[in-house]
Amino acid sequence: YARGLASGTRTPGRDDAESWPLVLDHTVQGQPMVESASVALGLRLTRPWLWDRLEPGVRDRTEQWLRGALRHLPSGNNWYLFPYTVAGFLESVGRGDAETARARERALELLEGWYRGDGWYADGDGRAFDHYNGWALHLYPVLDAHLAGDGQASALHGARLREHLESFSLMFGGDGAPLYFG
Image (cartoon, rainbow, N blue to C red; front, side, top):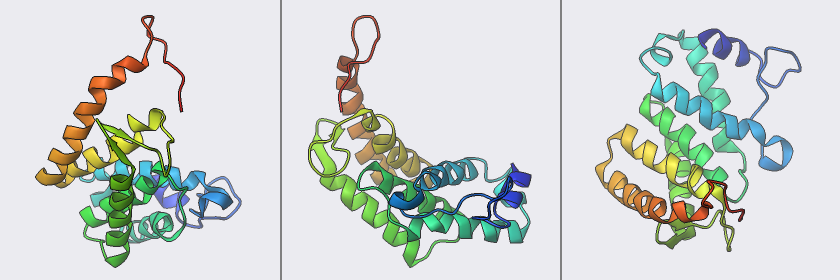
């Protein structure tokens, strides 16, 4: 993983087998923003074994690549939790600033506006409900609160997740197949 971080961030955006794609607006090349959250979360969960052992230059380049998620426009839905997750990681390793704070505040503000009660969020403005309720919309805030040791956020998001799980089982047939919705 350390070699992958070193290689991928050496020349991001270059068209070769080693370089990672740039994190850009969702309308240009969206998928790297999705992946940035997974990279950040993986680094946060494995910090003592990976991040803390990286060479300083690799850490700096990785931070710069991840910051693409903070500087570009996500899709107007659960995608705002990708920069939120990146910002949470950067703050956890002492690299937080006004940019990370804005990304986190914006995501939580949107998330609160999307909350519809009984543990359910709309996935963006309007009435878009889908399986991302159980995935991104609950997972990222609950996991972030847990990793940050934020009891207040854990209580809020944990209670909403518990409510969601109570009704989520109703979204499956007796044979275990999902009911299609969204």
